[in-house]
Amino acid sequence: MTVDQIIFLVIAAGTLIAAFRVVTTGNLIHAAFWLIAALFGVAAIFAILHASFLAVVQVVVYIGAISMLFIFAVMLTRKDMRDQGPQLNRNWGFGAFLAALAFAGLVFLVHGWSGVAKTASAFPSDFDAVGALGNALVSPDAYVLPFEVASVLLVAALIGAVYVAYNRK
Amino acid sequence: MVPLSWYLIFSAALFSIGLFGVLSRRNLIAILLGIELMLNSVNVNLAAFWRYGDVTNITGQVFAVIVFAVAAAEVSVGLALVISVYRKRNTVIADEIDMLKF
Image (tube, rainbow over the protein chains, first blue to last red):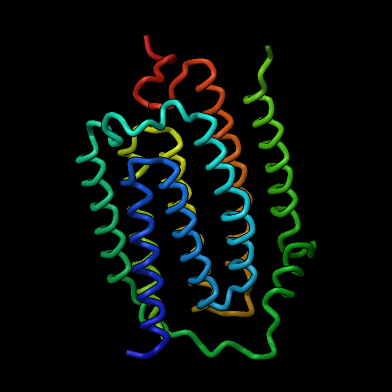
């Protein structure tokens, strides 16, 4: 086992433990903090994969913005956060069964696929992935249209969020 | 070098944990936390396929960036709905929000 593999296994195990705590912890504010830990683990996975832009965006957007939004929402709905009553609904056994089934199915598909044995070629040292990504996002013969549509979607969602949460009193 | 299957199995596990959270939690905010985990596992898959395929073809990362934008939109609308429902019904428990039921 090489150093790469050990680092990957440690990060993956930490991320999965944090993710498991997210869905089982009773106190929601703790669940939000465990989510931050899980998101950091995923950012580390991006860094291992040489996806440096995604790793930075993961930290800035997910941990910096989305997690804070979750913590604000938890605090605004504080009254129902009392650790009373069950945190899981009556059908949680069925939910666990479905999740296990989904995991088993995905693992089965991965093992049945011939491309899974593929190894990564060495990362080309003269290739600027961030620059290529930036060019692809604004180039008319690449992804400028999906990029613009995504920005319009974001604006529409934010205006909708303000409208939905607006207090008319 | 880490094999591709490890990334795929890791993201499958993350997806299943998120799915369990979505199906089993009673609190609306906890359900949204599960959805975030599922979206993240998809991004891990996209980045892994980009790295193990042709690195100069940046499509996988573009897809992941779009998923980031959609996740931000989804969570902002979702939390706005949660806060709006909390104002009207004074609860964030999914079982108790049954205005659409007769």
